[in-house]
Image (cartoon, rainbow, N blue to C red; front, side):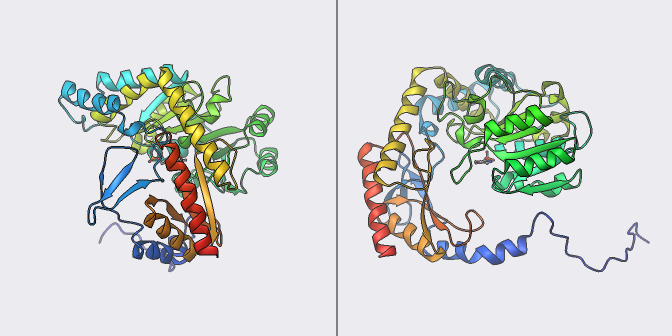
Length: 416
Ligand SMILES: *Cc1c(COP(=O)(O)O)cnc(C)c1O
């Protein structure tokens, strides 16, 4: 006899309260297939060394990537590449292959200390922003970043996949709700009913749009609402030291707040960060934050790159790159206005409506020499498919002008 205990349960499928792969795949997988058939996924390239322009290995076709999150162009910055090389030469090991909770390189400690001082708060540096979300959310849900009692977790409907992905894990600890995008009334109603509530959202949403920070801070003041922000998209791209939208608006990150960030987008290195207000709970998080404390952390070249990027963040070069990005965004908005024109952030969506049209538009744009990505449900609402365009500092003025011309031509081709 094995230890298996028989149950009377006959239905094997789960309740799908927070996740339903069968439904998601049924609705959207055919669009992925279409994108694949049109050679818009699985592209194999050589990096040609300038401006995120690539060469397709099969045909030699050159194109410019308009879907890179390296908003300041730092991921190929010579000083950052050199930082990676110097680090591996100095440490003579790729990584320690064990939890940094137990043993860490001096370089890791220096990186966390310098990030903490740059962003003027306690920073825990982890493998990626997704790992940060996976680690922090369940610990927050069970109340272990606060007073030990579980909080009702209200996820914004638009919160990034990496957060929504953790709903089932949070739901095993506490009540999980999903609110309409930026719906302060909904959040307030939950706060009126339950003593402990956390709201989980992006700072700057992946499809444009931003969190309603002033209203959220009022709810925190009034009800003690805990605020969890993932501000990955906005790190480095603006503000004095690139602290991100949310941190830039606050005097301090208080002990009822967490901000997640990415070092792999604007920052130009890789890895993720947790800006933690509740500093006294840092050790609990390191011990119980799942993938935050397993055998892989950011490797040595990654740390060297991040330290080099940190130096750039202290110089006027950061400001110059931020200004160039801002110029490119403004030029794009002037030549090709979209729904998010004027918001100052680099992500734009050219809407085509039907999924087939979005794929056809992306294919046209690729023929013109620009890689843009077709996006469809569940990334955007059904019937609102389009192509995502992401501006960068390292695009020449003429390239932005040409990009906009091609978008206009494509629009005529597709919509008539
Ligand atoms: C890009 C992004 C992530 C994923 O970041 P990784 O570091 O690649 O895990 C998570 N959240 C948001 C909001 C993002 O934009």
